[in-house]
Amino acid sequence: MNLEEVVKKLKETNDEQKINLEQLHEQFNDLRTDERYANLPMDELEDLFLNYLRTWIKTNSEILELLEK
Image (tube, rainbow, N blue to C red):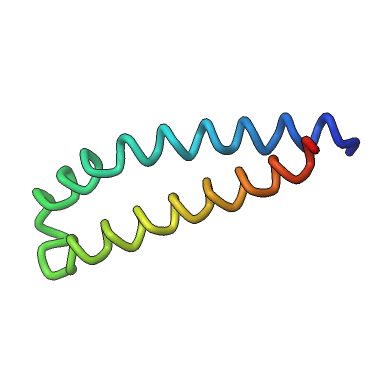
């Protein structure tokens, strides 16, 4: 994989993760209404996933910045 392909893939991944980040709250609201997940700490899980996605996007962005220099 050459540098251009890596940069393209990182940008695509970031775009996908930003969409996931935007939809996360809605997805967790759906899970909250499902009785199978009634005993799970949904607020904490949602925070965990939010932080995970934000970290992933931030790290990819930092790598992109370095590669584009």
